[in-house]
Amino acid sequence: MIDYSPFWSTLENSKENWYTLTRTHNLSYSTLHRLKHNKDISTKTINDLCRILNCNVSDILQYIPSETDQKL
Image 1 (cartoon, rainbow, N blue to C red):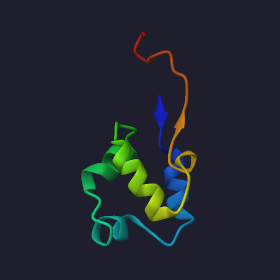
Image 2: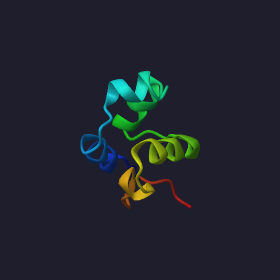
Image 3: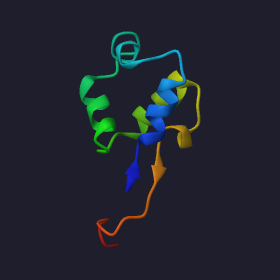
Image 4: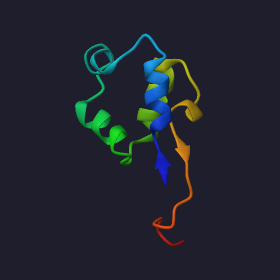
């Protein structure tokens, strides 16, 4: 499972916030909603967030093995 909890810590420690992400950087509310609920987002969005927050991918997301993951 991809978990976006690192994103919220990174955001909190940055000069950005929900408002600036949506108004200044044009991220949609639905994207932030998807992050909040650990739903899929695009790699383009991950790239944008890393650029905006000046951080690494690991500061945005982490992989946590889960029994509910789809069988391969």
